[in-house]
Length: 213
Ligand SMILES: Nc1ncnc2c1ncn2[C@@H]1O[C@H](COP(=O)(O)OP(=O)(O)O)[C@@H](O)[C@H]1O
Ligand SMILES: [Mg+2]
Image (cartoon, rainbow, N blue to C red; front, side, top):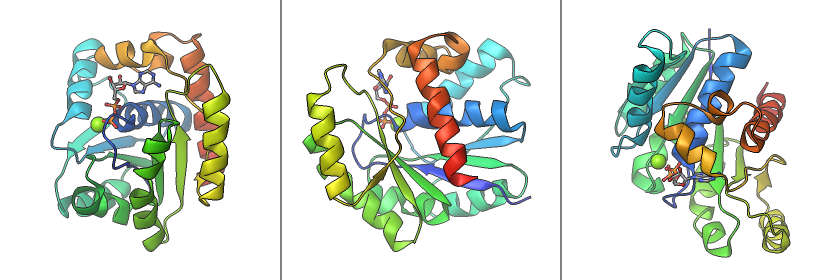
């Protein structure tokens, strides 16, 4: 098996990397039926805390995921090793792209870049996109915490397109269930299957799988 390595990266902290990584991993495990591993490269370890809550909630053998940590260039090695026995490897990265996330971007088949639709967040994104481009790795922006009022978001979509960045059509709204589900070690699809957030995640995964195969 040579699984696909998906790295979630964005220089800006608080953009939704950890939230997106957890949701993608849970959804891919459920949909593909293949083993899925998550690799936390962020020394803050938020994804690990989520995973521990998940073990408490579902039982150690019922998380549906394998969890590992790595740092520095060990991340690339660990990701490639996990890809031999998993259909997907999802990597969560720390905010400082250049030094800390580079090995994870280097190892990736695809990079996902969560971004809140504000100009400042877009500025912070170019470094991550450039790093992926240098590795010839396709990178997709994922608009996150999109407010219900659309004016700034549509301006941002234009700015993203004119910067030459690709973004997924699927977007995630600003919904508190993302935070509460994460706090309980779950995804929104597990916590509240008929919520808008769950529908958004399901659409995002469908689009992602169509793009990456
Ligand atoms: N779509 C969303 N709606 C509401 N809250 C969100 C959403 N995405 C992320 N958050 C919250 O924003 C904060 C930062 O998200 P996180 O995934 O930890 O970002 P990062 O890993 O990039 O620092 C967390 O409190 C998280 O619960
Ligand atoms: Mg994080």
